[in-house]
Length: 117
Image (tube, rainbow, N blue to C red; front, side):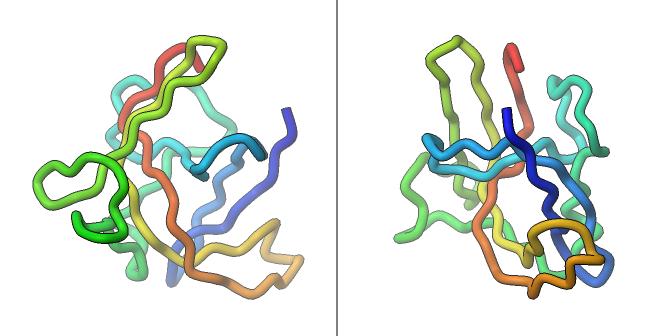
């Protein structure tokens, strides 16, 4: 696997390491409160600490199912693992802060369940 670090949110970005997967439609990672997310390199992302984070609402930009007004996703991979969560948008920087990469707005996945990862 290949990893990259992302700095997500504002005013104080949180670092999360993600696997670079060119075959997946989603950049996702565990969020705080995930009951089945196991051990990861970084703490779970705390969406409540980011003033720029917004849950993706149901509507035209939601291609998956909706629950309680929020857009959900579920992915199952060929080796048998799976993830479930909610889509959100936030500002993201690629790499460590020392790289000084400009932040961009992006749509990401906030896992609330992982299986066999």
